[in-house]
Image (tube, rainbow, N blue to C red; front, top):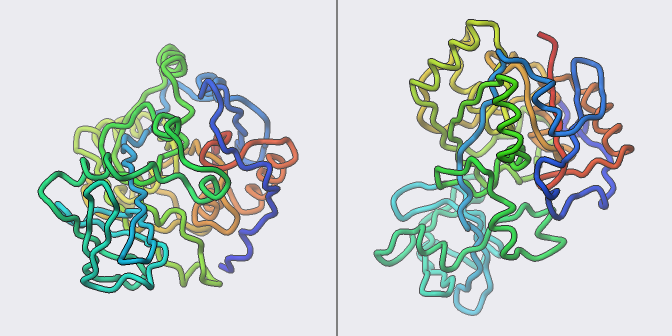
Length: 343
């Protein structure tokens, strides 16, 4: 499909620069089949049934944004995906000033050597020294806010809390699974009282999620791979819920992509541990997922393509038009939506 089909106009003042306080006070657009209506995140327990399962991503964002120098040249690095014990793929600002074999000084005693490039422009960095890379990042790194926020304000100490979900456990993401940012202990208690089930999986979100689609046709775009895991016990419980007629409601596009990567042709969730580069566009046949809670996405982005695949492009354009007119807050720190396709 032509990428331009997924374009829309978004006023800049709709981009949220800070999250709601409290987190569960956000608005939520309900798209139930073709019907579009306004709701709140706190309405979630009444909108789901006791057979439904909310599936969360427990990845934890690391301080993966680094600023440094290669000689006199200023460079920046956003880590993307771990390659080994001391090696990470990174997207780099001013990357032309960094050649294979060069050492970049990120300050605070943190250095890394550029080993090689991939065919999509990422550079493999190997960190020096003996300390765990996680400690180096805590010392020299900052939270990697999305570019549409970072271009409008600097990262600060509050983002260390705001850009982390209550489920964050497994370190390795360089972007938050932002739909989960809306959840609080209060909301979880309400969901428990309503009998809505919960499960978690792990997908380490990479910086590739923010890369623009430069191709004119979706067939010519390739996603960077991300590492994910669903253990056997979790897969068994998810399959049991499906067998009882329940819906798997992915909380965030990351959870959805991993569930669909792990599902076989008949919709059975299999044990999964490894990389996925699944790219979901209209025409895709969903195997396991029966709904999605997600924030609002950028024009012409792979994530807007994904929600259009789930609900239909025209439905999502109407939904986004309604959200813009109704003053919903967009993107990572913005409001949410609950997308429920016909059963």
